[in-house]
Length: 345
Image 1 (cartoon, rainbow, N blue to C red):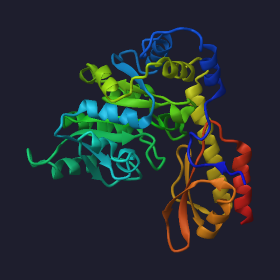
Image 2: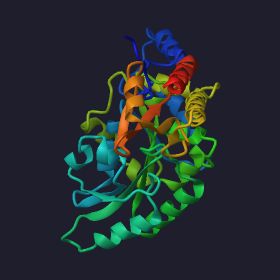
Image 3: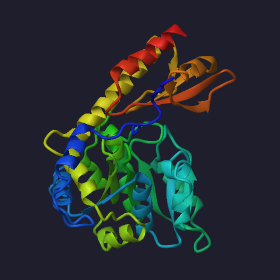
C-alpha cells in the first residue's frame, strides 16, 4: 500500500522551476567552487532583502547540519560554548555534531519552543566560574523552532540586545526560515534578522531546492577567512554553481522562496483547522508548516496505514502527539484525504 508522507518538508525532489534552471544551464561552463556567475547573482538577489547597509558575506553549503557546524565552529575558540534550548535542533537532531567540534552545549528549558532573555541570563550566571567552566559565547536560536513556533521582532530584538550587552554572538538557524517569515503571525523581515543577528542561514532544502543553504555573515570579523572554514569542513562544492543556481531561482522575480513557504503554511493551516473541526485537539497553535495534534493511539495506528508521520510524544495512557509537516509540494487532495479518514475513525 502506498502511503502519503507528512514526515517532513523534503520528501519531494525540487520545485520544477529549479529543475528547469539546472537543466537549462547544464552545458554552460562556469568557474568552480562558488566563483560562478549564478552564485554571484544569487548573492546579489539575497542581499537586496538584507537592507542597504548590509556589508557582510554570503556562502553556500549543501546541508543544514553543515551550515550549523561551519557557522558555529568558525565563531568559537576551543573553550567557548553555545547556549541553546533543550529542544533545539543542534541539541536533539544532529548526532552531537557541535559537541564533535569540541564545543559544549549549555542547554536551558524552552519557553514555547523558544529561548528567552531570562534563560540566557540564567545560563550565564550558572556558567561563570572561569577558567574552570566553558565560557558561554554564542546564543543559538532557530526560526522557526523545532516545535514550529516563531520569534517576534520584539523577542529577537531583546535577545540581540542582551547578546551585545554581554559580548555574546547571536546565531539563527534558518532551516525553516521561509516558513517563519511567511507565517501570518510573523512581523520580522530578512533585513531585521540581518541587523539583529551576527550570523544566520537561509534554508533552501526545505523551501523547494534539491539541496542547499545560504549562510549570511553579518558581523565583519566573522566573515574574515570564512571560506577557509567552509573548505576545511568539507562544505565547499567543486560544482558550487549547483547551489548558486537554486538560490538564484528561489530569490528571482517570482519570489519563489516566499511563495513556496506560504503554500506550505496554508496547507498546515488547512490540516489544523480540519483536525479541530473533527473534534480533536492540537498540542499547540500552529504558526508555520508543522502541526502537532493530539490523537488516540488507536486512531494513530489506523491513520498510519495510509499516511506517514512522526509520533512525537506520548501524551497519556491512550493518546499521543503526532507531528504533521507540509511542504511546497503537499497535495491538497492528500490533506483532505487525511482529514476525511480522521473524521471516519
